[in-house]
Image 1 (cartoon, helix red, strand yellow):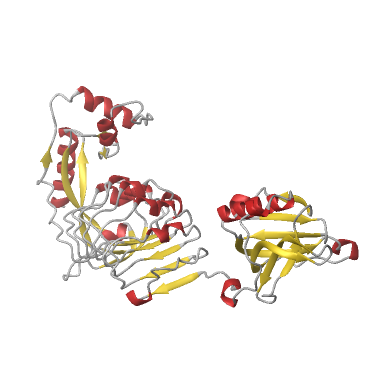
Image 2 (image 1 turned 90 degrees about the horizontal axis):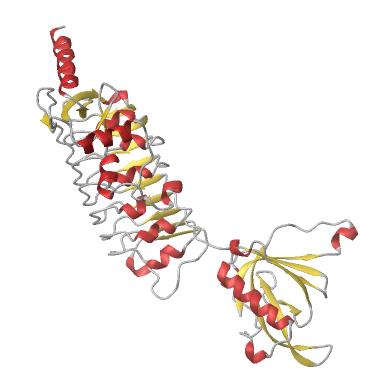
Length: 421
């Protein structure tokens, strides 16, 4: 039984001598195995601790020698083993939680004097230098020949870049790296993202530039990425749309969508209240969603999209007379902000209510409305704007919805009056 972790051996007599421990662990390999007990001249079970400075290791007898286990934080990879003789506390940290549990279980059995045949024993031999190196935080792999096929990724990684390796899918071994903060899989051939990426609870940067992605799943939008993801690079892929739930990723600060095939941005893009940098150049955007007006950006790049020339007289009418009971009910639910969910109303109504349109009059509409596009200067939402076209323009069309004919007529009257002036 072996365990890699940080270890500090604290002498409990130090305080009586007016001394303090360092309070900092050293990378070590712990082993449990049989060794000759010099006192009894009999073989017994010992724990051996090997560090970079002491690769031969220090040995501690286990049978009947453990006073107490402290395991309150074992799920965080921390525990303490208190020995009777010598009077030391062996403080363990930065261990894999499951490996730590197994190691402590073996130590308990050894303390109780269990038969050695029942114990997962190791040979107590000096360790290699690489086994007691400080845990690796960052790893960059830039070619297929350097990609690890037989060895695993260091569990302690916080930054991992794997580029130009022709990966067609995300390696599941990466998804066990619970400390990962930045994952860069740019310049590969990945077609689909596993939902389990959302289990990387510390992930703040996900870079997927220049792959073959055709979709970004709803499951990822509803995962722990909602609370952690700040930078997302999906540029140079094959995305045609993003799910409505995409705007649940509300911690996003930097979003890169350039060089895809996007025909629209998420309907509620304005809910990304922390977004500061947005680039969606060279897509197929014809018009921006009305919610785009709510953004407050520092930099915006929408160059190279086939935006339409907005004309308030060009409109789409989806009004019914009279309004259906379903439309009236949904408008009431949305207008009064009544909580809803699939446990209360049918799922298709939930989907309708998730894309509520706001009218100029302050009311809302669901599936019955008039839609047109109006021009908006992008400096209204961003401090810095990359020119929209080669003509030097910074205006773009934005969708506008109206809940009734009277609201649309009022809008046209105002537009004509502004035109006369």
